[in-house]
Image (cartoon, rainbow, N blue to C red):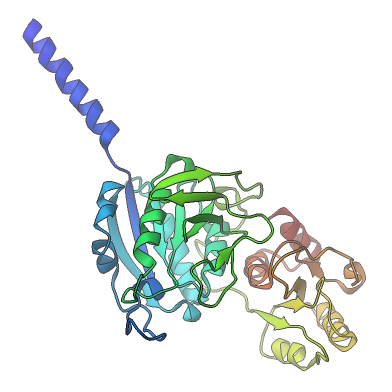
Length: 349
């Protein structure tokens, strides 16, 4: 009897030890982009999405030391071709994977051109506290000193970290961890392109070791009010870039083409020419929701500062750049066209 008791204790100890050693299950969802691109190592051009998700995993054998990995191909495009249909499909698939109970985090490989927009869309539509991390690269897989493998290793390390839970959707490149809400691409080719100009990164990651900073103080993921689980399309929202001698023609053209909302990447604090401002006031009164943002990389567009938003019926974007404002306005329009309610959402998120 004493021997059986001792054997039983050993078995229990081995089971507990095995549980302690078990690596988290991470699912990689691939969408294409430069990280899966191929080209001549000595030339600038390349073809996005040349490699499948299995190739990306196999290229970084160290990943098996961090997590139990599985992968699937959700799309295989350059992110310049990212669209509403892929966004909706990706959000639904991420929610399905995280709700299954078999996966503890998701890593999404994505092109860098529109990564900040996809990340923010997912940040507002994923209904889970589990980590979701977007990762890409500035150099294709066949380039000299390709950055994709290291970025992927760091991204999986972040997704596998218990401390990543509840932090919303994250973007990992070049040893930095950024909140989806804050991050933007700032350089056309540099591997240091992703920055969070107003707030800075939320963490740093080096060879899988993560130093975390303050958590995001705005609603996201499971605390977001937006739900696209049954959505089949999103409202059309266009961005119009302001400049010297700006004409109202493009504003009217966008509305005629079916835009339900307009985001103005304004000069300075979301400003524009008198002619453009008059045109926007006119379309706002017709029911098109107008958001004033800025073409500048940092700073806030404050309500009623320079432009009388109350009088014109506009929304001020606050901290959001024009691409992020467009994403939020698309989701806001799935719930309401009331400008006061949409301004509340911009203030809240």
